[in-house]
Length: 494
Image (tube, rainbow, N blue to C red; front, top):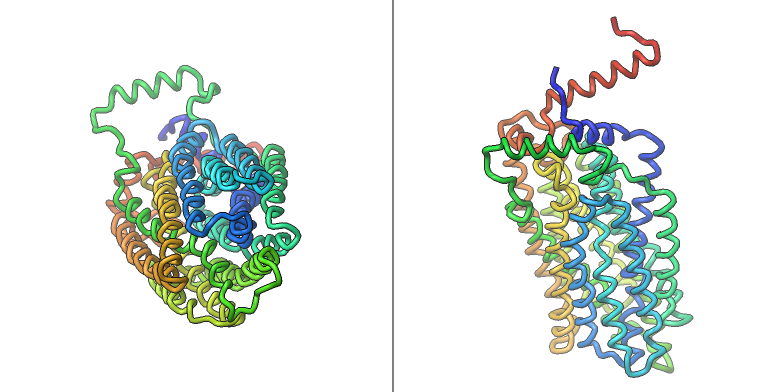
């Protein structure tokens, strides 16, 4: 009988907790952490541009604010995944939420310091970015508590991404409504919610991942690892940063970032058109009304996106529709809507186009977020957080860059040119997404669409040999655990 390494045993024992109460609570808290992570962006999105304009910050300066936000997140995405692999997921999530709370307070109080508004907003955005790399950590935590059930993992990853995409359904309209009482209030409310999230994470998020160097493993395990390394004659373990499929996915996420930033910057600027009828007797009142309307027009996009991701995409996936098809169709539909939006003259027209856009984005994002889960679990089992950090870092670089050309195009050529740029970026993202699907399908022997078992092909076996547990050893270990459990309850198989 094969004897598994103690660390592998711990990993399987952790993974086998899939149906316990602890697992369910952990997943629920993870979803709450996602909401806390995005609240500073989605909750404040309708009011941020009007808030800056009311303080005298020009549209051409709003782009650099997003550059600061996502520039800081580049550093966060580089540092946080390795820290999560070393110290545990919960600790890093708490760091992130605490830093975000401070950032929201700084931005919310910027209006009180005349002449320093831009400096304080820039500082607050930078701090928010430095502590804003939580989402890939949360996805890794969900992987920890869901493996080895790949179907459960795919469902939960899709639900997590749907939570991220659906957040604007409630957050943006609510933030826009609160902004009518003061454009700064959504930022201060975000700080309060982050504080609540910090408490909930501390009290209810259960760490199931055993960090590297855990003292409980003892010196014997460390010596065993050192001996294993000394005896190894093969080349050093490759880096996730040289993995071609992950870099291809990263390129797709880079261009998706134009959509993400555009959704925050473009609607308030579009609604300044006189055809929408939002002018009031003062600039402040006009900006408050624009903020409220920006939150309302986000509802169709977010609601349809969430529905398509959780119902439409998963239903199609269960019926055998390939992820590659979902990426292609969803990406094309979403990109076309960006070329149509500038033609809208009324709020209702904008809502209809946004609903169609949400359907395309839901299909696209559902597939492109679910695809790497199985690939990472098989090919990079010891670097899952770092692997997710690769393409999330590329997306962060994209969000850092996107704000500048989008605002510059608005200043020079109007809002239409800004939307056309976003549509073109979505088309490019679709091309890279399809390419990623083809690459992992070839590498995993056609099992890229999330089947519940590892395909028994030469490519998948080679992937398992790079660090994952051998399939037969895995089956033997689970069988032993089942027999032990039954015998302890006085059930005997023979």
